[in-house]
Image 1 (tube, rainbow, N blue to C red):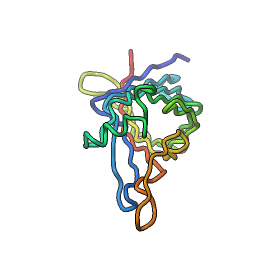
Image 2: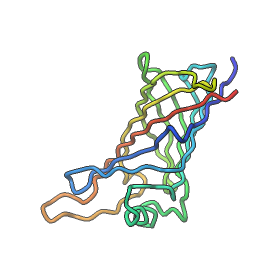
Image 3: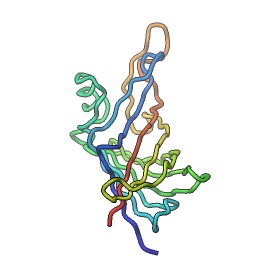
Length: 177
């Protein structure tokens, strides 16, 4: 079988996250600069090989002061660790439109396994004849597993930031010819 290569359409994709703030709401963020490459056997995404990389300096939470704080040593230490990377270890079909995606996430110099749920939204041709595939990706990680421990206690109990980070992404890939 021939290998098919797929690359990210960055204008129609997002790499996002949410974290609990003050135990009452979530703060959302994303990475403005990231890439995804996928190798498949023909058009079947089962057992695909996936790599992704995000530029940590491109973190965006709609607040410049918070973004600057996330880039420093309290959080991501982007001078020492400028990239977040993901490499798939297993992709398994979970029904007609779903996949279980397992891989290794490297962040802040630490590599840990992650499990993600992927909804496959289909394949279509765009008006210019390019074949495209769409996916929704969700998952959860514990930030302290990657040495991201900054926090403060609240007077009423609890912490300023939650430990769990929700991953929420929309990915559109373009088949390479």
